[in-house]
Length: 276
Image (cartoon, rainbow, N blue to C red; front, side, top):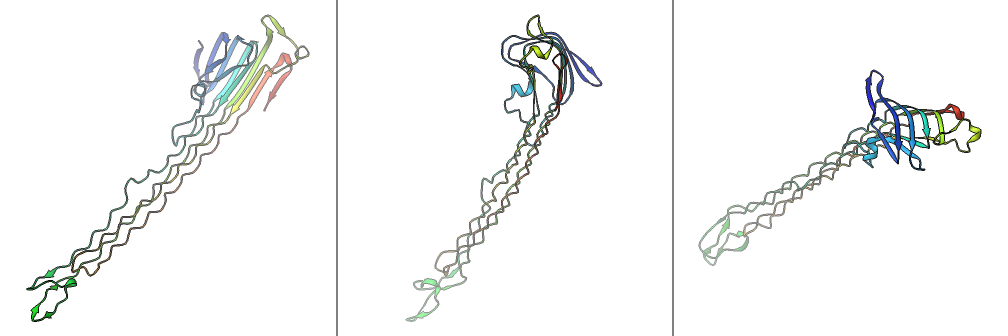
């Protein structure tokens, strides 16, 4: 287990012997971390990986909705004796996606139905549409008021806006120095002329991707126009007009991808020393 010392400059981890058989995790989010390993052994013949612990445990490694991704942090690592090959991965967290606007589950209020007309009853049979006449000496009935048309449906509300996606986190920086390299235990490679492959240390920096924008929801459907009044005195009162549909909500904005930092590798005994 590492010894962790909190300093003004960051976290310091010191290991005497580390045996790798696949993957090894360090919590290096956003902080500055100094790691010193005296003897680092790779048990298998594969390239063994040292990676940010959060990204290993979360394949998508994405922030919560609308949040910016965490930065990968800075890692300075010194390996006094390396037995085998390693790959160090430092990645920024992807930004959280924006949230879509909530859809409407119902339409706007319907129009009110028309009111039926009133008839003034008289002696004798009714005449359709309330025609008032003296027919063969008998007074017929008349409409006191005519039926009204239906009321208009309420206009739908505008859709709800989507929210913005979060920015991706920067990859962070990695600097690695290896003092001695061994092809096999106790068999040191002391000069590059004895090695056909100098790629003992690989560094991969991965920026966090942007979060996608949230989409605005459709506008609410307008209410249905009210029915016109029926009956003898309706005079064919018309249905009210339907309400108009609301406008679609505004889409949010995509976040911004994180940036790739700088990696430096130094293996002095092999003449390896570069930054990019």
